[in-house]
Length: 99
Image 1 (cartoon, rainbow, N blue to C red):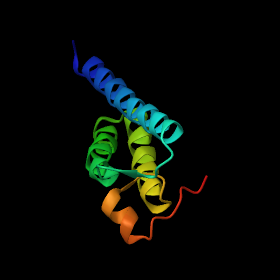
Image 2: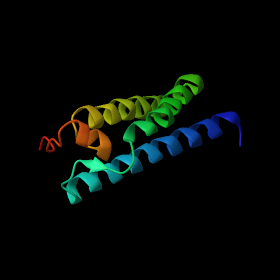
Image 3: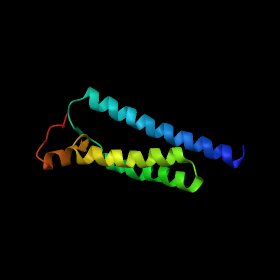
Image 4: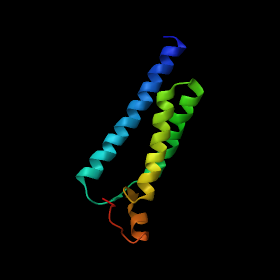
């Protein structure tokens, strides 16, 4: 395989991983009413930022846009109390999910 085909394969792989993450988030939000989790979703921002950086470096737009959208989405999950760690949820006064 030449460099271009590896780049496209990596681009699609990163986009699929981002998509699987968001399917998991959607399942979690629909299935369970509690807005708190055991894990901090902000820990995933470096992965998504690396995906976006790979998109910039390789010139592949799919991984760039899915990475940037995922970084923004994870930050919004945290800021709007949709999925926050349990300790943060307690410190914020146990707010209900906004929907």
